[in-house]
Image (cartoon, rainbow, N blue to C red; front, side):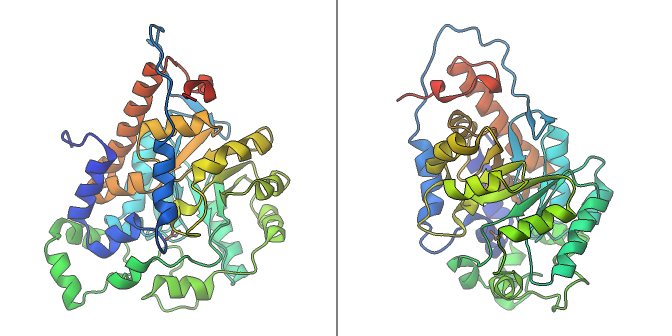
Length: 378
Ligand code: GLV
């Protein structure tokens, strides 16, 4: 890993090591991908104030996230199908996050089950919930997260219907992987991926197996999501979830100040300002463009988290400067996982931490608490 100096290096290694269908699933976005591109482009437009001759010898990335100490203001976002990027991928990612002292969020659409991860790690992790029509199953899923001692529930609120990702259709992305002739040619050039997947505990969605009356082979993920996810989901259901889940609740996928204001009264402790990494509403604003107004409006009532386009520690600094208390990364660590399992995820976290600490130094800042819009050039 010593030649890996940035997240883009991990991305290229991921692309080499993992079949195209799974790499593209992580890498690409919905429709024209305008929002996907805007997330990074708008972050890069934000410039820093270079400050000089400030004592920056005591730089410290540590902070708290929802009241818990964290080594830096970073959380691994829920990402579906991690176990298809690397055998037992969710366990690798969770171990890397916990070793680095930051939270890991398990997606409902994981390959490892909640129980698989709980058995493999010794600290609590967060669980992300998608609400499906079968509410008995959803209640049971929340109860499983409680039994596994998950320390926060992340309710994703921006995926009642799925934005089409053209590339997933073109690639015939299936779970479990389809061993068709064209796929076999691709798999044959990725032997370390094949070996890892073969060794992995599961080949399909661990949280769903045996619970839903579906075929275990979900051949078209988007068709399946459109048939199972509950399009009636509304604010009353947040009350219902609140009544089952006793712990910290985070609403992920808020992009509008009016929604953020409702969220502030919903009993949630935090929101994630997010457009789902440009994978949902194509044409939505970049997350960073809406962050300042949302943070101004509800930042004193809720903890503000941010995701969308973070590929560098400089991006984390930008989001903190505009009102986020912490950031989530999705692709940035999925690339690390695809590139090299736990070691690759650890590398992604380390790259971002080093970039953040250097940026703080060059902006004349020692602590996370000091980061506000004074670090930005106007
Ligand atoms: C699911 O969360 C996805 O974006 O694919």
